[in-house]
Length: 100
Ligand SMILES: [Zn+2]
View 1 (cartoon, helix red, strand yellow):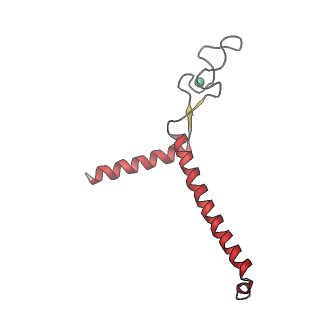
View 2: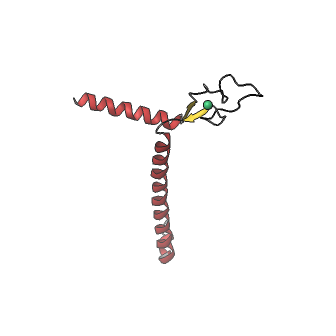
View 3: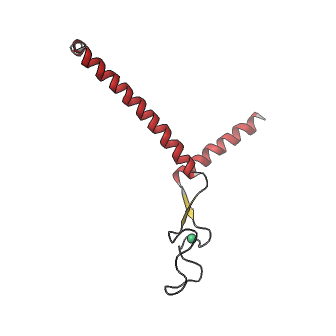
């Protein structure tokens, strides 16, 4: 039973990394060409589903990128807070600079 849970978690991690690394996949309707099937330069035109890019966003890639971004910005904020505290300490008590 525990093995199953571990396996599911490992599969989820692999899927999350793959979705983060490859957020796009070829459009299913046009097969990655970006044009409607059977269209020429005169007729039809770009695929409606992907808008002519030939790529569609994979399910979950938006969530994965948002999560990573929020975690990274939270870490950056923490780092900035620490830097500010150190600068304030040095400004209020400059003698500590001479100890180094
Ligand atoms: Zn398409």
